[in-house]
Image (cartoon, rainbow, N blue to C red; front, side, top):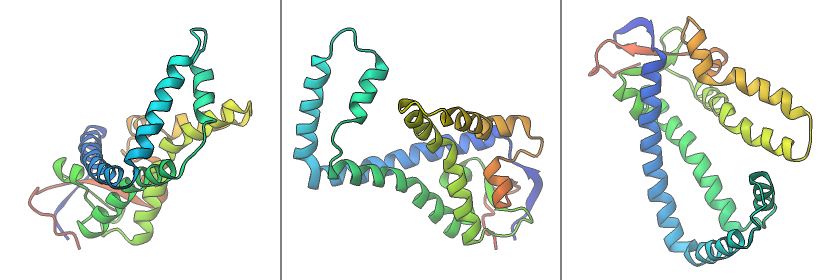
Amino acid sequence: MSSIEPKLASIYRRGIAFVVDEIVVCLIRSVILSILIMLFFYDEIKNFLTDFKSFILSLPDSANLLEILRIILAMKITTWMIILTILFVIIYPIYQYIMYKYYNGATIGKKFANIVVLRDNCSKLRNSDIITRIILGYMPWLLPFVIYYLFTINSGFYVILLIIWFFWYDPWILTFNRKNKTIHDMISGTSVFILEDKKDNDIK
């Protein structure tokens, strides 16, 4: 095992890693989706954008944002929308899984910030640890869509999910948790450690 400080990464280091990973994944998404669009969906998307522009121009001045969003959500869902949306969503967790599994628990962003994800006992992540961490890590990002949907159908349950989302939000947890652990860290039994040596990435 590489030499690791008995110190958990701060919110600042994790924030830097997050930003770098977002940039990397955005580039990956842009390349993959651009190729697919040009090869398979160019005409469909071009027609959709033309129709959407006409729709926006036809809206009355009195239309508010909520009404516009409800109309947009009610629009017909096409095959290309489903395919591109699924690809957009799954690219990040695939990237995370590959990096955690085959690159010693560190994504490109974490390597940049000199931090690494390991189990609480400093051993290498197992498949179950990686999958649990990724699924739980996505919850704060998925809940707002569920909350909005429940709000649009006038379901009071959205208030409960809103409270859960607020307290699940990673920056709040990291700020007020002395152990510098998010909820997905706690449940998955993993921690983000600071590496002593940037060149030492040989976690076993």
